[in-house]
Image 1 (tube, one colour):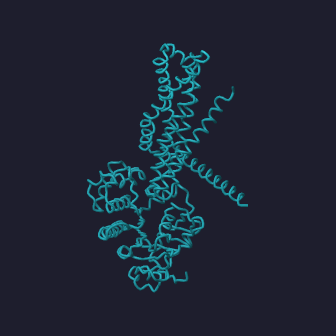
Image 2: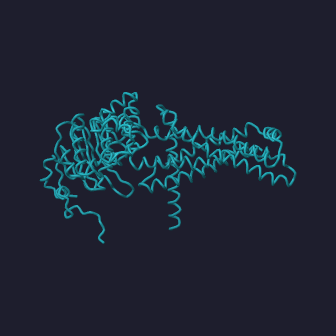
Image 3: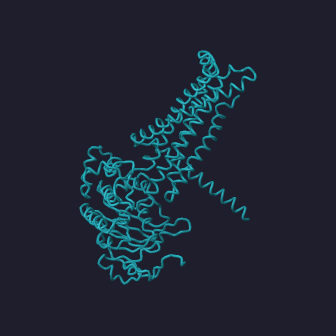
Length: 267
Length: 258
């Protein structure tokens, strides 16, 4: 863990900042002192292998998991000790696209997209439906899809609905958890382009976690690499091929040989 | 030393589980009384628990009443006390068998489906998605189910009481050749409001317990299909046992003076 950490100072005061965040589950240390800043309007992609703590980091920022120690600030506001009610208020700023889309399977597609508007903001159903259909249009889904149930959609369409739901109440910050996992390369690229477009249209701050380098290159302004519960490198997206960091090099080029040893037991 | 360590570990696990359940219950209850409530969700659960459980609870009550009449006839005829059959059926059904058997049937039907539904929502991240959409999962998922369980099971048991007594009546009149009007008057003669009320109080507690166990085990399920399966089993087993325990405790509270 002696890899050099190169910090690129963000241009604006950070939208999200994590300082020395630790989280463990029983004996297993997942986050081991995360330091990370995300600037306003920036699109940060966090890359890293499976089980390195990417998802846990996002869930700590959202407050779905509580970090054991460290500080997480959103717009300068400390969030780790927020009470439930203030936490709900804070979550209005966030939208999230989950890895498996996490659509509510008991609700129709349009009700899924409008969920935050109806339940969170108490908008009348008719008006929320109009907005939902507009948002579905923005991700390339026709209004007829709105009457279907999520189980009737393909994986790529579910991701689009998840994206429409994440942007429906126009959040300031959007999280994308493995947005392209399980999609074919063409559909993956469609989703990537939709993400770039939606984030730009909203002027939102975006944090994406992925291990798909094609996706990272497309979406990222800045890239951070997480390894063994720490951020070991951050830099601009165009610098990723000559990071000078052996860990990043190994990951970007997808090599089995290198400083990162997969924990696979020899047969 | 190994034995002591194992005992201590089991005890700690027990304390942890009890504490977790206690905190869960308090949080859930506090969300039941604080707005906003979700009337649409409450209605859906009420229909699911109240209306769709009617056939199974009704059938259970019908056969319970019928078999009670048969059994008590074969017993009571040994000392010429056949006249007490109607009273025995009415008291047993309203005080004990209606609420307990109804509660157990609902535990199997509703407790399991709640645990499976909420458990699946947990492992597919739908519960996390609720939070990110500014919706408290306790308010949206747990509170409606608890409220529906608490209110619907007494209604179900009231219907079950009537059907159970009617089952006894059918056997009494058509199989054992009682006079219908004297059977009915016998039923009313010794039945007091407290018999029915204690049964309904039991039903409310059982409904709450079933919903609580379904929600609790579903909410804390982990690790995919197997985790959901475990949660479902735990929900039904723990709800059934708690129903039997609470049944004894409530009976003790209501009828301990004699």
